[in-house]
Image: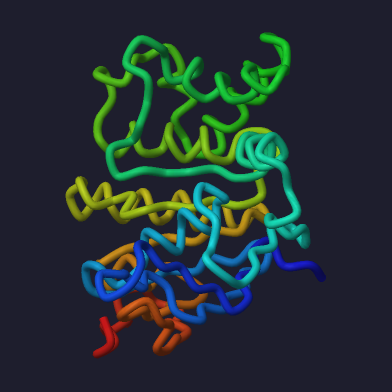
Length: 240
């Protein structure tokens, strides 16, 4: 079975000479369809760089990235853009919802930008909102939604259509503990539907929703663990 995401021996260096920053060092990671992987590590350890390279927003200095079995290094810029629109969903800490659009319009917009006509795009957007229990908020604007509702709308937008990979960078960082748990539960639910997800988080309790937790430090994957079935039972790894 083809992995949804694979990183093979990935290095990423910014700058040259003595001032060069080695953001990623020999990182290899595979994420299967339906799998939720949490990434933990101290500030500056390379977590966000891992996501941007996984999503094709940046190229590795060396190594290879495969999305659904296809190497991104072989893709043209247009092909990468198409891949991001159709296959990869991003969830950001600050939601990135457009204030002038309703929840339904925010979720349907990526489909319409990709050429899907308005009516089928809205039908798919309604289904995505329903999947995350915010269909009743379809006509509300972002400033009329709670933090947890905005994040669920953002996750619906990230999974609408044929997207098979979610990349989330501290998606619950601005939320209280109840809404943070709600966000992780929503991403977990998306994975139950076959979507793969990589979530950067600093919170060990939230990471316990993952099937696997990867620990990164100084740009290198140092260890990984499989949390127990109960989120409350997970204890932070010392490499955090």
